[in-house]
Length: 245
Ligand code: NI
Image (cartoon, rainbow, N blue to C red):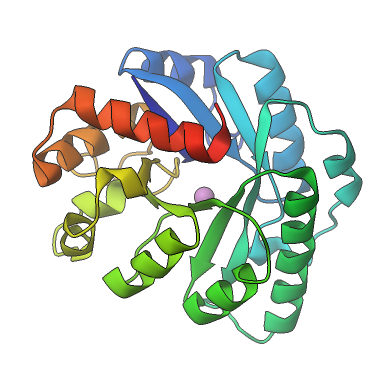
């Protein structure tokens, strides 16, 4: 059995969440972790974790949404199925003009994670050095979601206590991420889909969903030359270590 450690199964993208969860269960995905990125998705995450036994959640404000209203008091009364703060981080892809504010919002949420003793789910795009510098100031562990950096960067994050979130991107043609992950161990990774985005090969062009974790898992079994049972055992240990589920 596998876990989708990062997805966005919200009403905006899916008409029938029951069906998406059934599809996952039928594809050996027995747990799903849903990540919020703003206030309204945070509220949806709270609804989803209370409605579905095998759905867990992360609550956080994404760097692209820092100008939206966000009520931080949501962190004062988190139910036990909220297992991390996320997704939070830095994204300089569209603009770095607001980087001071991005860093401030990230620091605020890292402090909250530290105080609540919760792991963090980090989004970092074109902001590697700042992300590492900021994370160094906090005693937190977690996942670098959709990691797509160099082997050197991977090793820095792993040394800091992070696992790397790996998704459909690794299956893309001409993707040299394979070479990076080949040098790492299954002990360093967790599987995710980032649904509805980043659909793996051969389903490119279709909407992604948590059931596709199985396709990513099979790809990795080839890469590491291990079987599904072994990959599931190791990645579930990694999830236990980070998220305590
Ligand atoms: Ni995401």
